[in-house]
Length: 90
Image (cartoon, rainbow, N blue to C red):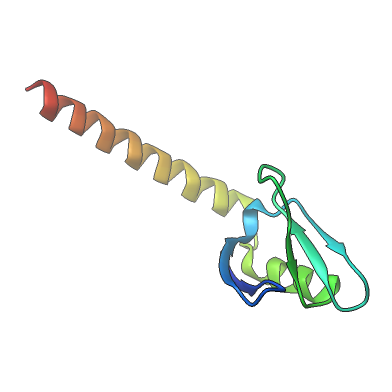
């Protein structure tokens, strides 16, 4: 789900498409990608429609798959934390 974008300053960024809150057109050839929880949006030199298509293609066909993967990752992290806690106490 990671998508490579290049902002208007030429800086490469890899973003998780699942965390994009909105894509806002800024003229005919630019768009802002908003993540909601960040302090600002990332501006790219691509039309908003093209950015939306790229992000949509990176998302899983079903968010059930995504949520299952997030849940599995969370459980794995919790198990690692528990193992670390036991190792520290023991």
